[in-house]
Length: 497
Ligand code: ADP
Ligand code: LRH
Image (tube, rainbow, N blue to C red; front, side, top):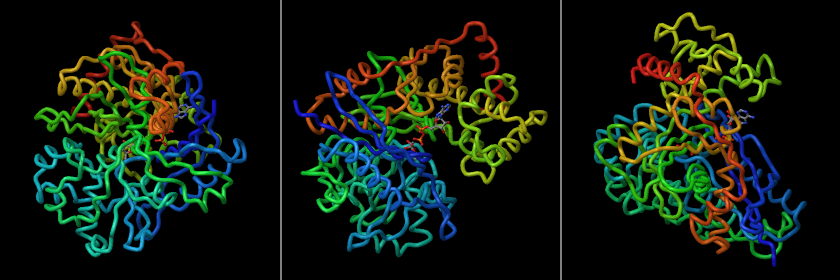
């Protein structure tokens, strides 16, 4: 039988990778052929994404593919973080360098949104958690500061969609990533005409919505030739939102499970068959992020491993060789429950110096005796805080949906941290199943395979994921259960939750 290979480009906020996938006997064989840092840059006094470098990394990935596998490739698909976009001018070129969602231009936009449309109305339409990173906030900033840009812009494409456009010339907004904008009608799965009108966003920015598995186009023939590809290479939309591609690849069976897509952000959620928009979900500020193949991702963003990434940057100035495994090792040896922080405090969103931010948080909450010079202590505080926050969010997801949760699936790069997996089981008091670490690329590849008719349903996709990956199981530790329960109460008290 002819081999069909797919190539996933998965861009995270910290790193990106190109992964080849091939379905064989009900299993997905994967190979990473290219990895590169992503990360944003300061330019023109603002934080932006170097989008043409991302494009070049894709071209490098394609070259590495042909060097190893030859000229035949069935399809490619790109997934990235949500909310960020690029504007195109009428002639199809980029209007400006795309902004990074942590840029401070969105300061003050929460008030603008509430005033213009009313938070409850925005939530009832979109079902999306209020966060200043949302595309709607970015639009409010553009309208306030540079309204002429909105007039000049002919198209708005999310980062992954923009990369698909660079590769194929086709303009489309994939549903899962478009849903993160807070500009989509969650039930109709279409742009919200009301919100576009209320915010004065021009209609031309409503790019055509496509769904995961749809064939968007083909790689530009000149580019294909340049990198050594032969014939037509399809661009098949994965869930362009990385979290939704990752959720596709949750190796879950049955009901009563929750998940964490663990990376720069930790997205804590349950899967539902449709949007859950009610008083409780509004009060708790929970998102209904679009899922693939008809699913809805009822989830909350937790600040995630971003905090430790930023600490690592600071530690690496003194000790460039310090990697994540060494940081985890130091945390293992540090004293438990030395201090408590709320990972979602604004202090940690975009600090100049995250260790100073942790110090400030500890001081303002009266925890002045914690040694923030000690790497293990700081890392352990962060990992414990994440585990506590997972517990806090899972309790809220259960309350808002009435769903039971008996097992937690953790997927994504964060699963490589066994200590955090164990802490999560301890904080939640039930079993944690960890893996796959490359869930996002796995989901991306299997959605491409779905688009090429090699698998036919979400159920089949998850069977393939289970057959192809070993999960690591973490049970709550009985001997520390009392300590974790007491510490959780302390965490909530200190953090005012
Ligand atoms: P993103 O896609 O958002 O860039 P990833 O899913 O690649 O993020 O996850 C990266 C994070 O996973 C790192 O910031 C780090 O905290 C964690 N991580 C990766 N490898 C390890 C490891 N070997 N030990 C502990 N943590 C790790
Ligand atoms: C995770 C993620 C998350 C979004 C954020 C911008 O990578 O896509 O789901 O909220 O980035």
